[in-house]
Image (tube, rainbow, N blue to C red; front, side, top):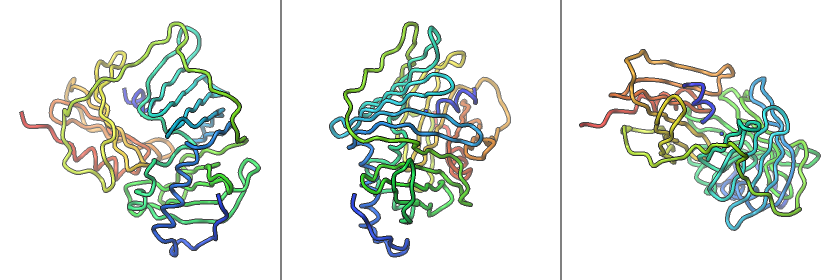
Length: 312
């Protein structure tokens, strides 16, 4: 079950100010431009995603769509997979032939669209450092570093195209500055070469529906800056119906899965090989809860231990 849950959890030239001299207004302006770029630009390209020893290459095409975007991401190595994001809706088609799976996803954010629309709110929990000019995919880009103000979130290092502010590279780093996960374009072209084809499931593909979630449990307190953004119910093969909540500060995301308790068990603490994904499984009332995310242990533990059963 836990392995399955891991799969679910899918402009102008600016002076190089020192980090300490950035005013809140300047920092907010930087974040706004970098957040807006992936939604207002038409572009196509190929980027590489790396997590530990695993690496995957993805082709992406993006078109502006009103206040949002219309994106298509297709893997070009490994298991065939396509993700289509339109507005706030996202669907994923994976597998081959009759084994294809059509699934609605919880959000439509993906590289290079990593920052939330109201990115300036991140400044409550991260400091922004503007760095030097470097090159990615043959283009000059400005390095931007989001440095956590506490131990409840990882940091990010972005490299934003000097002319368009589109992130060309993004690296998630731990408290020691060591890379945990990274994305980088190998090629990118700006401009509109036509509408994107619609994403439709192939023959035999099955959609996994979302259902409205209740409030099975309550939580006493969340880590600073985190709010519950998603609460749904979904049915999983061989596991029945579970509730899935997602907590986020706008950049870091943590999932909570709630399912009926089959039998008492000892709490389980888990960590990925690279230390990027942390997980805690415990019993709360009559339910088994699994909390996991690409976040520090302190944030995962705070959410898990803050859960409590509702009075009957």
